[in-house]
Length: 354
Image 1 (cartoon, rainbow, N blue to C red):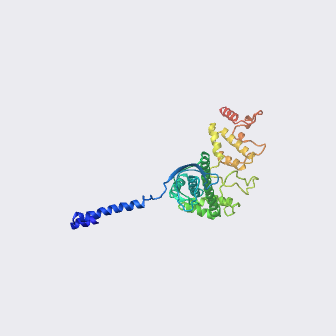
Image 2 (image 1 turned 90 degrees about the vertical axis):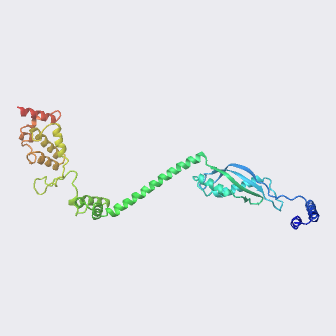
Image 3 (image 1 turned 180 degrees about the horizontal axis):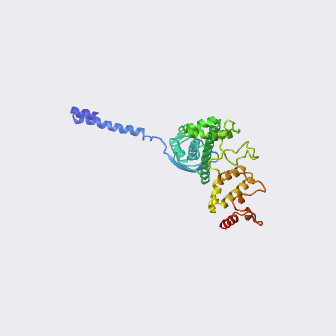
């Protein structure tokens, strides 16, 4: 300050230089008297490495294997209390903080837990005795090979069970919908079908019988009398006029009787025309066989459709079908093996040539 005033005021040199020199000397004397300046007193951070410590996860018996770098330093205290292994105290502190995180996490989320630990342990904290300040970083987590394999299998099983349970609930819902709503009655079934095919009125009418049958089966009931006449015909048809009284008759045949097509195919395969004497013999013998095995409707159907007359088979002792067509059936009989279609065809052919 003296130097500045002397220069700015253009004092003589002796007037401001002497006081300035004296001020410098006085400052040096005071500094020497006080001694050296103390340092800040903050202890330096030290570090140690902890490797492969088992920490519990949220799932029993599936432990995380924890590794990390631990930084620590002692905390000045006025009590004079010290610890024999401050590094061990710091490790215990970091592990306790890490355990609070891992025991709430699933072992499958290994990478996520590792990142979370790096974030949580990165700030310093005191141990319980307040003797050491510690923090952790460079965290590594892993699972044992066996645990990884088990978790993989459990994950696959769990996913499969979830899919199966979903499909089961879907099936139950569908059954409840069909049984309790769609097929609750024939009328409900018809309305349901028509709602899905609103432009097919005629087809809906044709399906009333089958839908009534489905509704009855779904409710473990017999088909109502109201719908019996609409049921589709299938299987062997009963003959209501077997005694010849004319009081009843067989039901209407289906659109494609299953017995006629195969019989015609068989005659075609052996190259025997239906109208030939051989063909008529075979047809009548087939009709007789149908009656023998309890299929009178099929027998009548064969006679009416594949022969020129629809008469019932001749009475016992009367002329046989073969005799009426000029082919004696006695020629077809073989005492050793019975009736042979091939033999009958050959015999009928020879008779026709004669």
